[in-house]
Length: 292
Ligand code: NDP
Image 1 (cartoon, helix red, strand yellow):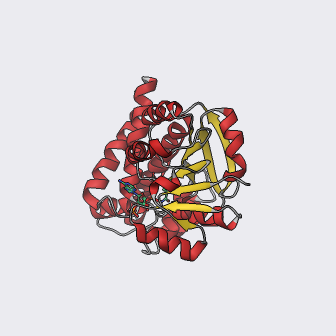
Image 2 (cartoon, rainbow, N blue to C red; image 1 turned 90 degrees about the vertical axis):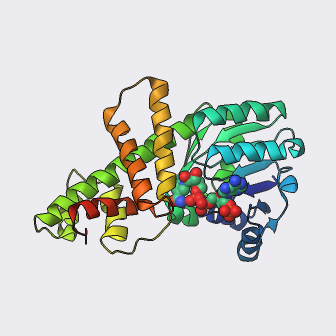
C-alpha cells in the first residue's frame, strides 16, 4: 500500500471498483464528471471527492470511461498535473490504437500507461472478483498488481500496450455471438412449443451452453426482469473495436463481422441505453414470441 490512488469515472463499473479500493484500505481520491456522484461515493464508500487536477497528482490513476476518446481527453486535461513515475491504469473497454497513442503521450510526462479492461460485470465489480487483462510493460504491471488485487481475482498480463483492449474486444464479440445465437435458437424452440426453461436446462447440461444460456438469458430474458447493468451501446462499441482488431490482422472472419452488423442493427432498433440482453427483444419481435 502507501501509494496514493485516484479513480476517474464512477459509473456502473467504476463506483464498485473504487469502493473495493477504499475497503482494502487505500485512500482513494475520486473524480466524476457529474460531481454529485463523487460526493455520493465518498459518503457511501469513504475516500475523497476531488477536482481533476488534484486526482491527477496520484501515483496510480485509474480511469473507467465509456470509450478511449474520453480517456484521451482526460489525459489532455490532466497532463500538466501528472506526477513523474506515476502509472495510469485504464479500465475502460477501449481501443488498442488510441491506447498506444495515449501511452506515448503519457511517456512524455514520465507516466506509464496500462490498458487494464475487466470482465465480470457489475456483480463481479461489487464482489471484487473481476478478471483483469492488462497490456503494457511488465514492470508497471508488477507495480500495480497488488492494487488490482483489491478489485479482481484473475489478473493477467497479456502483452504490450493495447493487447488488453484487443483481448477484451474479442471476448465481448464472443459474448455478443453467444447471446444472439442462443436467442435465435430459443425463439425457434418456443415456436416449436418447447418451454425455454426446459430448453435451457438441457442446453446447460449439453455442449451448446455459454454464459448467455447459463446466466444472461435465464436471469434477464426468461424472467422479464431486464436489469440494466451493461448498455447495449457499450457492447456494440466493443464489437466495433473487435472489427478493428480483425482489420489489423487482415482476417476475413465472416461470422464475427456479421455479428457486428447484427449489433449495429440491435443498437438502432432497441436503443443504446437498453441493457445488452435486450438485444433479444428484436428476435422476439421478428418471431412474434417471447423467450419466457
Ligand atoms: P457507465 O455509463 O455506467 O459510466 C460511464 C462513466 O464515464 C460515468 O462515470 C460517466 O460520468 C463517465 N463519462 C462519460 N462520458 C464522459 C466524459 N466525456 N468525460 C468524463 N467522464 C465521462 O458505464 P459503465 O461503468 O457500465 O462502463 C464503463 C466501461 O467499462 C465501458 O468501457 C464498458 O464497456 C466497460 N465495462 C462495463 C461492464 C458492465 O457490466 N457495465 C462490464 C465490463 C466492462 P457521469 O456520471 O458524469 O455520466
